[in-house]
Length: 387
Ligand SMILES: *Cc1c(COP(=O)(O)O)cnc(C)c1O
Image 1 (cartoon, helix red, strand yellow):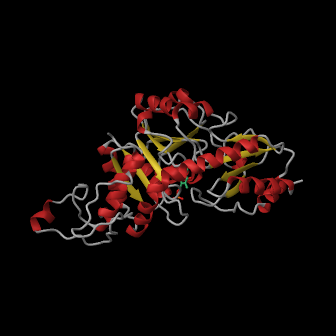
Image 2 (cartoon, helix red, strand yellow):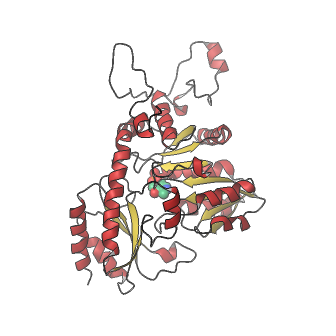
Image 3 (cartoon, rainbow, N blue to C red):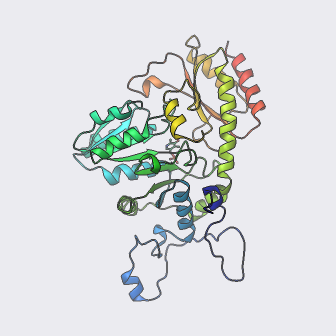
């Protein structure tokens, strides 16, 4: 019987030191790693993950996390980066050089948009932003120098779900690689490689950590050449992760599938409740039919995360929706998501998108693990404060 990934992350292939048996593995911290003899030192290759060469390139603790993350997303190779954003930057720095072109969705995670604009300004790269709902039409945008296509499923804040298989097919037909920011699905609800993705990125800061106390990122591939290129750039930038932070993620990972299912369940209940409210004109939750790309979600995903947005009736001003957020008591105001606590944030969409048609204010919810009825009462009392 082939175990389910959620079983595999609880039953890893870890051998405890002789005479000692416990579930957690030791936290191996090291800068210097010792070699048996000079010959072993001389013949060692830091890229060889069957051996250890230096703390920056991994210890048994980080290798264990890498193997489990690769298993969740059904990939082969994984590297860890000090934040989700550093994982994103590694991809663009590894695969873009002067003269190359990169395509990014218009709803891409904002710092990734800024990175692309910075590469354009100072590094001779060209970057263009595409409509996330473009699907197979992206082939018309791909040029001979288009090396990398970023995708995000769903996109940040406005939550459009792209047609990933169509984008990947168009990219591969022209020799471009596709990198996907797969953070929303945690790699649980969307399996990137069976949909054609080349590199998948996770902000482990979110569900993998689950405690709102660690920043980390990962990049998983099935292609050793892509992995080694990414590892080389990671090494040259000197990026490593703390083994104590890795151990915190190893501790949270076994409960991730169950936490994710609870976030999904709570978020769908609240999103459905909000869709019946007169103050709200649209609920941008991929599992609800109002969300652009809902049909792609229904075809390709097996679940949803706890993050979604709503559009208020245009009759409510920004001051009124700000008052709604300030009136919430269980929902706190802050960046990031994926932990046990519910969060709420406003976004000024016209400043973030090339073409933003919606007239009402957009507010994003991260649904945590509090009791759903309590969260709904909190939203209800805050809505009443708006008028
Ligand atoms: C949070 C987030 C990131 C960045 O992760 P950090 O660890 O905060 O740098 C990237 N992409 C998405 C979609 C995110 O939500």
